[in-house]
Length: 203
Image 1: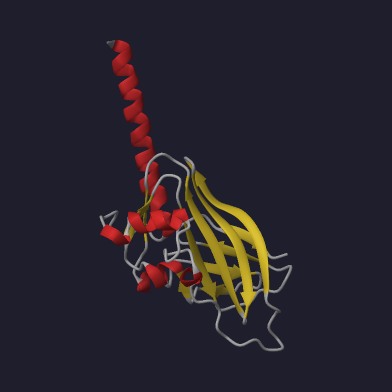
Image 2 (image 1 turned 30 degrees about the vertical axis):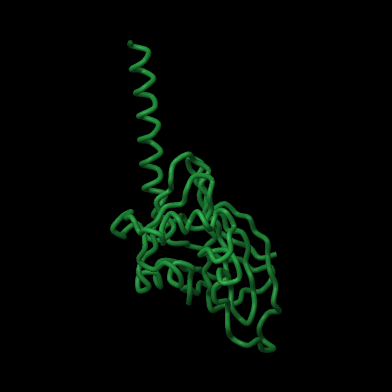
């Protein structure tokens, strides 16, 4: 009997630990000041499942998922279009990870592509802020000290003000577009929502 209860308590403790981590880590998709996870119906966990499966028409896969890129026409002063593969870890805890996958320079703008991956056995509750809050939730700081906010993000463009869950084994691809084009070899600091700042170098 003692052994049985000990095993049950261990399971409960492990589940509670993951639940807490999921709640705290989950708000990093956007802003932890939002109201918390809700049941968004077909636009919530089901949509995240579609994303993870790589199905077309999901919020972060297929042609529509690319989102708006930098739209300014290139000039002589702007760097040539280029993509940098980065694969830098922004966050990792209890098999929940956020990775800065790549940076794209085009048309005088910078697009950062990130992936949220749930490698745990429980859903990862995440949330997007409203469009107004989203505008000031992230930034990059250039080497000359300039602070640049995104002009558009995946959250603002597709799921503003929503809460949903990333299922176990699934992923969500996110992005942010900034109206600046760092040159090759330059570095900047990325503050993505409320994750710790990350130093990024291009090239």
